[in-house]
Each structure stands twice: as C-alpha cells, then as structure tokens.
Length: 519
Image (cartoon, rainbow, N blue to C red; front, side, top):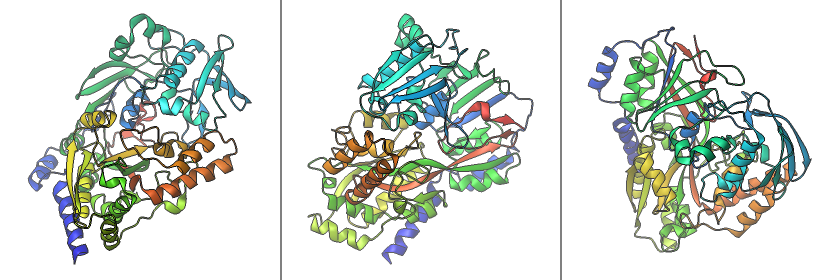
C-alpha cells in the first residue's frame, strides 16, 4: 500500500508541476494561432532556460553556456557528426613521444578583430588553463606542462606525464583559443565585455537574463555563414512562456520542453518535438563530511535504495531518461555497461540500513536543486523528497535559480546533497570519474577513497587503452558500492522546433548554428 501511495504521489506531482499550464492557459496558447513559418526570415531565435554563466571559456563547465560559445570559438580539435575527433584549428599533428605531440596550425584563421591566429595564442590559451588553479577547467588541463613554439605555425604540447586523453581534452571548451594580443592590450575585463574568437559567429550583445545576439563573421576561415544574418539566444526560464513563444512563432527552437507539453507542440501547426539521448546524467552529490549523516556509507546506500529511479523516468519524464548506476554511459570510453539501464530500489532494506547506522528514527537533510536548468529538475527534487520521507528522512528541498545554484557550489556552501546534471563533452570516462578524486572537492563533498585515487592516478598515464578502460570500469564499480554520488538517470534532451528549420539535436547538447538550415 505504501508503494502504491508513493506512485500516486509521484503522478500527482507530475501532473501539477510540469509547467505546462492550466487548461485555460493551454486553450489560450492554441487560440493564438499556428507558429510562423517564414522562409525569408534569416534570424534564428533559440529559447534557453538559463542564461550563460560567463564569456570566460575556461571558467565554467556549463553545457548550456558552451552551446552558445561553440558558435564563437574554435577548438584545436572537434568531434564530427559520427562522434570521431577531427582537427579543427590544427592542420597536422604527430605524436613525438608519450609526453609530446607536435602540431601545425591551419593557415588563414583570424580572430573577429582581424588579428591572425598564431602559435602564441595557442601557448597563451593552453598554459593559462593548465596553470591557473582558480579556473573551473583547470582540473581537465593541468596535465599540460608547457607549449613549445617551433616556428610561426608549429608548436609542441608537452604533458607532465603520458596523457592518453589529450585529444579528448583538446576537443572541448578548454582548448577554445583566446586572442593573446587583444587581451594583453585591452585587458581581461574588456574581453569579457567584448569577447572575440575565431568562430563562424561574432559577438554583438549580451543583455543579462534577456538575450545573447551573434552575427556572422565575414572572414571566417571556412567561409562566412550565409544561412543566418543573426542568431539570438533568448533567456526564458519559465517553461510555459518558452512553450508559448514556440507555439506562436516567437522562437525557432525551445530547449527543455516538459513532458506535459509534448503533445501540444506536436499537435500545433508549424512545430514539432525533436529529441536525442544526452551524454548527461542526473545525480545527487552527497556530503561525506564528518558530522553529516551522509558521511556514513550505510546512510548513502539507504538513500539510494529509497529512490525509485523507474518511477521518476516513467512518470516525471514520460520515458525521457534511462535509469543508471554510472555516469559513464555507453558511447563513452571506459563505460561499465553492467551499471547502465538498471537501478536499486528496496525501501525496507533502506530502513534496516538506517537503523544499523543509528538513524532508525530518521533525520533531517537539505537537498539543493536548480529550477529550470534541467528537464523537470524541481519536480524530480520534490519527488525524491517524498520518496525519502517514506524512510523517515525529512528533506528540505531548496529550489534555486541557476546563477545562485552555481555560486553555492563554487563557494562550497552546499549542505547534505544537491541535484545536478553532469555531461561529458570529452566522451572519455576519465572526465566523469575524476569527480571522485579526493583532492578535487575538499570542502564541498570531502569524499575520499584511496583505491579510487590510486586507480585515477594509474589510468591518467596509462597509454594501453585496454588496461585504462578496465581501470575506469573498476572505479565505477567501487563508486557503485560507496555511493559518493547517487546516480538517477541519463537524460534525454527534448527540443520544440519550428517546421521552417532543419535541426538535428546532438548528444553533447551543442546548438551549432552553421548546421541549422532553413527548409
């Protein structure tokens, strides 16, 4: 009976909290008419749920921010449509030895102010992100020791130790090349207000919490993008407003369409749903700090066993997610596939573990969650709170705007747990399991496992890819036993799209305007 009551509570919360609006609001939206299908309109408008974090491409690890940056900055390497790493700014490259890769830059690449891309820019960029410990991307690039300049187009990247994931790292935002001369002459604050890159689109304006506007760069080295005269990213946090703007033609693409609105979007003249499996996993990050109940592995296991991942994905997400016990999903190097598409649920065993840990009468905890950043994030947090109540754990769900949530995490001000969705644009399991490294989250999670630390160190320099994959899998298996993070599900990204455009969602969630065409 308790289980049946819980499912009814889940369904009730989903129906009341999906952000789709009341029946009256739905009728009003549909009465507003079909979405505009103007083939001559050369402005592409994209509705995001949250604003970008910064234009410092090294000081965030936020996918929705990178989705905007991807249009302005080029990486040394980039994944193609088949998820294969290909050179982007690099022309040729050669592995000299285990710690040295020699590369040459493509000719004819310029920044948006007209300056030519040089090897000095590469050295400035990579050595900045590899040495500045305050940057969010530093942990992913500290493996780089230095960049040696050979001639005006040739450089060598030298790592401290053998680096099996170097090309993976150079295909993500930390290798977005910055303009050395421009920053040194104008200053960093000026760059952040007037950013320039080498990408197909250049910066026009950023009105915080409102819009980011980009225009084509006429001298782009692969040729100017003629499809769109302007790309506008509008910031629309409310689900109902974002959906309404899509239905009436105010935007061409709207992210994170909640399940309650999928039928409306598909049934509306001029719009349709487009979905893709994301390389993002939703999870709870737990405190292992002394003094917190979650410092006890038995408590962490109890919380995990009380959460019905299947009910969340089936009811709250209408199937738009796959339960998982690992963050390294299939398609990523080193995935432990036995932990994917499965979950543990046993409330009675959860109660037994709490009793054994000395919390037979339960305890109180805080669960932080963003509101509007991920699909049904606030609703999922509330559902988890209800599920944990069933084992006498009283959860204070603290819903936060995205900017406040980011500040809380960066300050290490999180309490017992927070809900977050973590992607992996490297598609290498090393990036994901590095979140278990003990020295990385001191003061934020304080989790430490010496065996995991040893495996992380060994796998980081192992050039034998078969052995390295097994080391990454073993880390995942240990984490599944220790549960420093409670895995929930791999997300599906759900876009509402105007019929006038041809848009194919990507697993990495990038929204790359040059690939979006008018029909």
